[in-house]
Image (tube, rainbow, N blue to C red; front, top):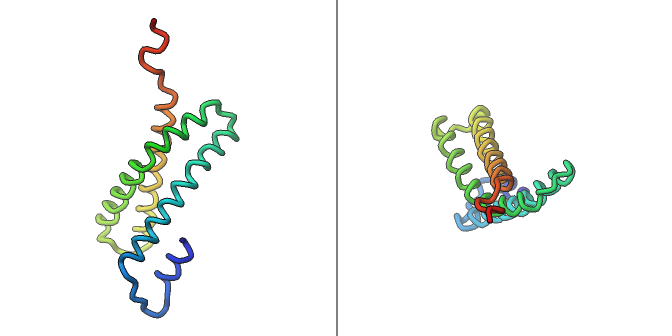
Length: 123
């Protein structure tokens, strides 16, 4: 996917690409990112010896699509503040905001996994 996106956006010759092709590339990239994020979080927590890695990854599987939409909206908002310019400062700010929102999503999954279940043991 990344190679396809690179070729389309860096071609020296103007290439007319159907909008559907671009959407498929983006959607495919999103699915691959989702599929890579969950095992990556599990691996990092396993390397840290965390005993609740499975629960965290299950919670993240639910929260990540919402977090990705929030990250996309935040990234578009920041790019809008820069007038959607293509200068490096815009890219750096957008990437920083998107990374922060996705990090917050993982942190929320972690907190919700650690949260005690209401009513558990209160018999």
